[in-house]
Amino acid sequence: MSAPSTQQPPRRLRGAEKDLMITGEAVLIDVPSAPLPTRVVGAVIDWAVYVLLFVGLILLLSLASGGASDATFSTLVLLSMVLCLLVIPVTVETLTRGRSLGKLIMKLRVVRDDGGPIVFRHAFVRGLLAVVEIWTLQGIPALVAAASNARSKRLGDLAAGTYVVREQTGMKLVPPPQPPPYLRAWAQSADIAPLPDGVALAVRQFLIRRWTLSPAARATLTDSLLGQVQPLVSPPPPPHTNPEDFLSAVLAERSARDGVKLRRDNGIRARLLPPDAL
Image 1 (spheres, helix red, strand yellow):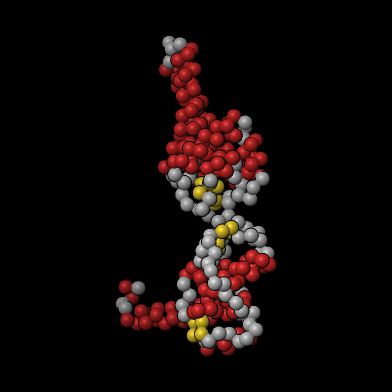
Image 2: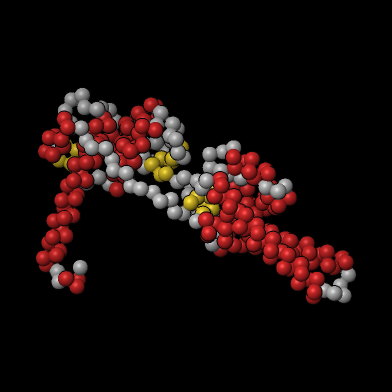
């Protein structure tokens, strides 16, 4: 086994089927974008609300400005259009940090490319381009752009550096693979320090997703994780141990020991503390 001498900066992981990011600590972050059909349904809900609002304002203006000139009425109509199609959508997305009525119903949210919440600048760019690509051109450029990139970004998202994610994905926690039998005796007798949360999560995600990675990405990530795990284990594994088997054995044994400690602590707490304090 070999370990790298330097840390990698945050980067996009090549060779993965999903859109994954790797931090400098080799932690994989899986933030899947919302499916295009779900985005379309949420957008249609928003469009319907804003159109109804615009129609209501026009009817109200028609009743309230009976003696106004045509130029004045046209100006009021234009201001109402800007209010309903730009000002209100931008304000709503800014105040709710990337949500609207349609996104709330479909459990969606607009986030930055790095996964952080959007601010006024992002909402304004998205809203400004929405006037052209959605309202003026009937959404055709938005659909074409969203269908041509992995994160289903429309032109406004590409310009603002944002994309839409699902807030509830119904993810199921998949258990990591069991360690190979030939390392069980070594793992049980080895001194394995507690793994930092980020390292443990990175090893777990890697063992689950390693079959989806390209050989180069898989080897690079294996070496990076080895460099973080090996200093925490003594003695080293038997010679010619497969690096991925080593990571699997360390993770499984550390999880087992943490589980024993947690059960022991819960038992002590149950004996010493009164029932109403638990």
